[in-house]
Length: 107
Length: 121
Image (cartoon, rainbow over all chains, first blue to last red; front, side, top):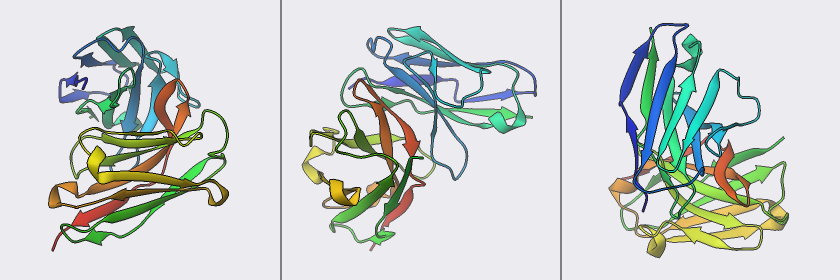
């Protein structure tokens, strides 16, 4: 089973700043990586798939990069509504696995 | 417009079997490439993928739970049913069903609202 490690656990920013979230896989997943945003009491929302393709309706402030074992989600120009937990998920190998999440706080 | 909704008991006793139904609209599970997955999330914890059923009745299970899980589909009713046997308090979680993006893209673009299942005597 591929383990995804997200670091750090919590990040704090001011509105307008840029956030860079990391996801590292225990072995290569090629570009089979997705990112989700989850707000309290809500289901996850797909942001990025294929490491860098934005899902339908996702603002271009969200971008993904990386391949193999190291991936990043960048949120430029943070807005208060971006406060959430962000999860990465790999689908390069079964079983599908998720990272433990990074909480982004906007103060 | 794709929608999914989970239904089932909110409380089950230890050792009982959980049966959850995912009712969906906006797509057909008889269309090539379509899949519906189940993912759960214990309170305050991360997401865990459980299983996937595809249009051709191919089924995939998380090996850690495979012996306890069964997936079935009813294409005419737009239902997917997940059963999990021998429930334990550690299985307390919100259970989500979700629509898979595509045949070679096993991430999920539409999710149900989730249903919280508590396992307690």
